[in-house]
Length: 204
Image (cartoon, rainbow, N blue to C red; front, side, top):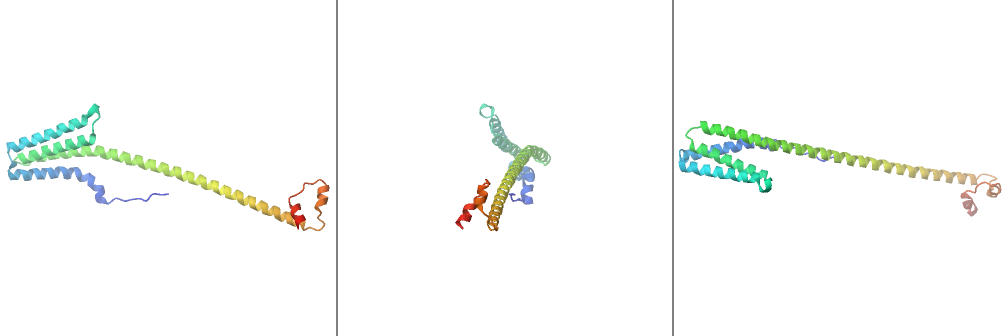
């Protein structure tokens, strides 16, 4: 049985592709808004953002190593992304021009797309593997159904053949019994095999 095909909306397909640039652009815009509201050349705000970014990076490093060397990739990626966002916001808020924030935004966007591309490739391989497994299972089920259909057809045909043979045999026995001069006792004395229809004839 064929599974129904689902078509995703173009917005759902495009959302993962534009998410990194939307994320970094949002951080840049918020940083510049913060800059316009008193964060420009503010040492205290800069120290705060550096501390937060360093803390997030440290948490990402601990999450990546984990206990026994096996870390949590999702948690580590989230922590490093948070650290980068805080660093970008800090620079955008502290700097007095657009050159350094735009440069850092470009680097952050490129890094975000590099990380996202890795997950996209993994997701694509997983999707293709699942699709191939589904096709294999579908072909196996279709083969089993075809074999069962052929087997059932052969059984039906054998039953029809047996019924037709029995009908023909019964017709032949009835026709023989109605022939003039037919004497089953003579056939028995001659040593010919006695047919089951003799009892039916005697009953008649």
